[in-house]
Length: 123
Length: 180
Image (cartoon, rainbow over all chains, first blue to last red; front, side):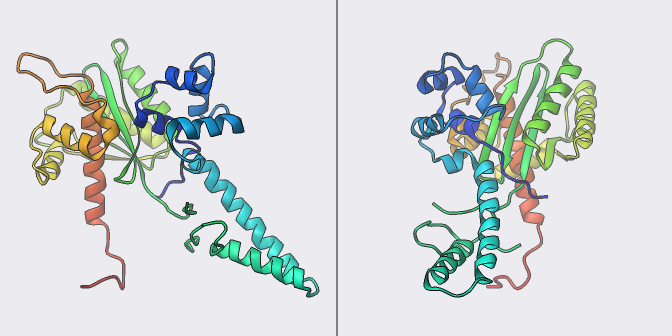
């Protein structure tokens, strides 16, 4: 049976790089490893600043470090993209509206070059 | 970067029990090792082991718990380990996780294809496949030495990899696929 991604892979990438929690705490500028443990066990969400620090320390993108959260956020955002597109399509036609709908369609289908996303496989 | 949230995999928790605790490895598919480690347990071994396994099941929510098949004819595990393995599978069921027993003979058969025939050679093969594990690779055991506790991690990883390989080979081929 397939499984959704974990919320974060901070522990995985830390261990891959061979760091201890105490060393990561030092690199993040924390006083001790308790906070690092809470981040890894998903008992506390790091601040945006800490996320960027994690990216730099572990040499991995936030997208990979927070796989489950990213997956969920994208899924929910895309759901709202489809809703807004449908709503806009029902409104009267205008050049700006057409442009917005086209953009939303490309986002939903995953072929927007600006976003560098690949298409979501259909279930 | 690619949007890949449609990708799905099987998360597997593989556990190898030893006389003083256990080693574990968690895979997401055959290429991604999520977590690994050992737990050293010296008192109240059964209860603490089951509690730790419960914690791992709760934290990682695996699809399958892979353990050694202690009932297999080639198995050489003590009655305590065999009993504890059964209890572990029962704990997994209470978490809604299916259990799978892999005989050690199947592990040796699987790794023999890569010319890894001993425990140490299997550990080296795993360390080559997963560089993160190389940091935990113990030195080769001398005949007068007892087994390094870190070996449990490699045994657990070997069970996990063998399970995933067997599952892949027994998976039905997609219809209309490549027939060349």
